[in-house]
Length: 147
Image (cartoon, rainbow, N blue to C red; front, side):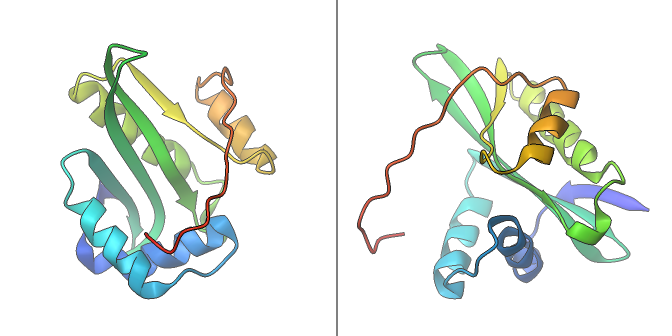
């Protein structure tokens, strides 16, 4: 049975693996750990874990911001990932539903998600869940050693 719950500090290693799978790259473990620990304790961020048989098999992070151009509180899913071998079992939907419920509970007027152009199947998933592709996101890599 799959349980969607708030992520815990003890989930860090499993969540690291999921994020590495999502981004198809490894990260500096100490920087990842510092950011994970800062974010998990932030009142403006919620981390959710999909757990099955004591193992984290999915993860979602939701960041909450009061944005001027909405004049309201907005929820943005920053990461949503289900391990490859567990996909197709509605775990992503369960994580998205939990993110939506939390966003509604906090009074958000909109939930957003940014998704890499190469993740075509993810686009179809989000659209099947009622999200609308209405924006572009532009990125500019910066030279910095800060994280």
